[in-house]
Image 1 (cartoon, rainbow, N blue to C red):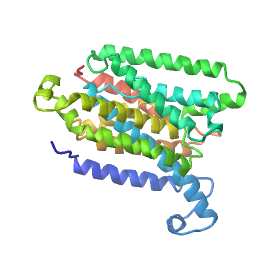
Image 2 (image 1 turned 30 degrees about the vertical axis):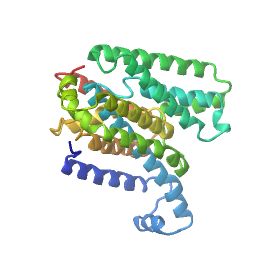
Image 3 (image 1 turned 90 degrees about the vertical axis):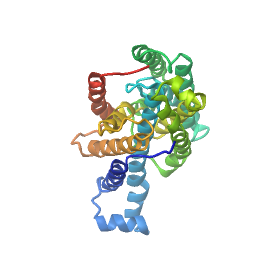
Image 4 (image 1 turned 60 degrees about the vertical axis):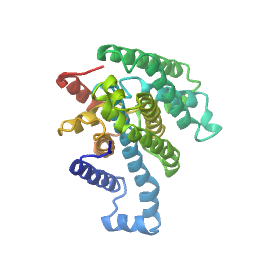
Length: 331
């Protein structure tokens, strides 16, 4: 089976991705002209280049990358579970990844190595996805799957609350809250460099599983009869989703609902092939979070709204819409 994507939708979302990232370069307390922004990206323009290259561009790329990771992970999990309500956040993977970051912050592991916090987030995302799979995520009913996800998410949330309750000092508590609310402020290219390999590896694994996901739409028995290796497909999607969610949490903290809403919006354009919606879902997730970050920077609040809060305010109604309008889900 060849791996193809809807060309017009993919092209439109690619352009929207570039536009959203470029638009973010204009936002900030210092007004910079378009010519200066373009020039600073090409050559050194002193302070302007420092603002654009070291502050605005990493932030815009971090928001887009985090959203793209969540969109692709959500599309992969929904295809594997054959359930449009599946999502790293709903199933507790994002909460587990946030728990990993919380554990690293709580024990001040970042003082030992700067990569300790993101790596802990990725490690916990892998663990949570494996727990979900061994509890029967690939074969239980939709309602039971959601209940399992809610239960696991509640457990991870309780452990996060426990860590916050026992925070050793107010500074540690403030760091924990910033991670849990989600933000891409003050991100640098060093953060992106650390997350990018996991995002790339996760993307490759999910895309490699695309033929298997397409075969799964025929049912497990039929898919196996036409030569699909379902065991490899499950391993690729689970490992890929964990790497993507871990990468997203490592640069943006806990962001919910993007992974469930983006694939569903892509399906609304008429393409229900789980293999064909992978790339568009990633692009739409990136655009969504990049635009959400732009919006919170434009809001006239004294204190900037956290990106995770903004994503939840937009995504939660979207999740209700998905749950209310989905006529048929399969386990």
